[in-house]
Image 1 (cartoon, rainbow, N blue to C red):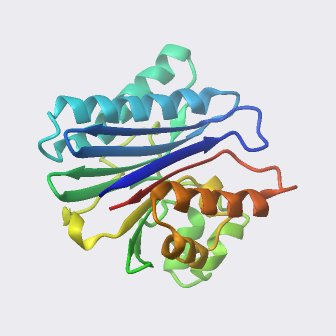
Image 2 (cartoon, rainbow, N blue to C red; image 1 turned 90 degrees about the horizontal axis):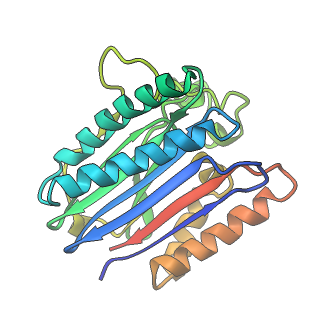
Image 3 (cartoon, rainbow, N blue to C red; image 1 turned 90 degrees about the vertical axis):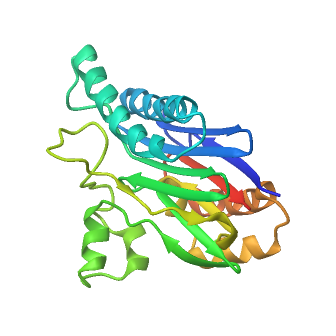
Length: 241
């Protein structure tokens, strides 16, 4: 039986620019996390628009195919660019996004920016999305270790987001995969994954009987590690299949 749970928290900031949605319809699911950029609440508008558009595309698809994942990214990009024009703010109103869809026993995910999806099997991480960021690029080139991404001074320098002019699509979408091959998923913003070690995600998953219990344990770790550090907004969705 699939269980899921979401959380979003303002942290120590003035605005929560993260947005999150979980939609269930007829045994099919759409999960989205977005982390807005722009400050002063402008990023909040972009992230809210992104999750809203994904939800609309999911419902318009009649939950029967995965076309909405690509349409979600492309439509969100168009809507956010239009939002910038309407507000006279082409520098603000940007957002990351990560989406997980589960339809008819198959799953697919997509992302842009540094909001992540982790895929677990047998209580181990077997895949995570690769950030579109400067530190991730350095890790891929071997200049830094992957574990140092979360503390790198340029960790907030993103190379791809929704809300920047594209010559071609800049998001990434996975192939479809059987849900039966997946034990659990975690979708989260950088405010969450920067403050918890992957090995603890796995340890807590092993000890948990539901997505709610798993997310509670991870969130407690995030909050403990974020004390006194001017915590960013943090948002996550835990899914156990």
